[in-house]
Image (cartoon, rainbow, N blue to C red):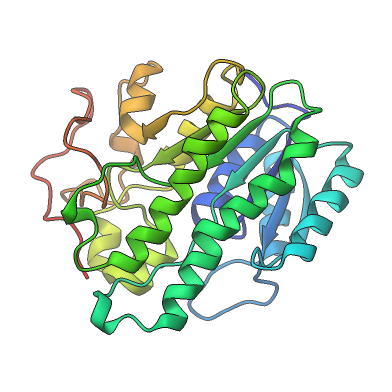
Length: 292
């Protein structure tokens, strides 16, 4: 398996999961378009498009940093055109950018509701749409959404209906687009079984305690890497949980993904009951799920 010479367009790639996916591809010598908003350092958000580009270069890849707000139609179209011209094409699109605000209906302001839908659902739709003409020319094109399985249960909505609607909106794009492009482009969703040690978890969900109970972003990076090396003509329309998918790919040890091996892992939202953890994954007693 190799992504050597492939070009990835990754939204939200300046930090966290997006950057981890970029760095995994860079180890093969891939090209990465770092499409994100952050151009100046923020006290609570580590990384910018420029620091990410520097890390990608050190890892062995080539990077093109592009400041991009995926709510902007014209800017998104222009970013794809610039990226394709710079690298000679685009092979893989990763919809990683996302916004989160956990609040019940009566407390969620409409401006926050609109922001989540503009970035999560609409932004994913727009980025995917803009990527289609370029992916049509690629040898093994993939679109990947960092979004959950479509498990329509009350517990995944109650207490954070607005966020869940926006996040499941990303997965609805997978459902429809996989059908529209079947046999030509692989369109899949990937979701973590546990919380992942990212700025969102640290700043918005649970602070240091939840960070310790989380896995590292590298588990999603390794899963994404395996997806991108699948045959796009027949590997499509899948809603994958990271450790279950990796176990199916032959991974037999998961402890190295733990952010703190002494802590029990915290399960993430949206993981269906009928997708059990692989026997080879060591968990210990799972913490109660995160909540608003």
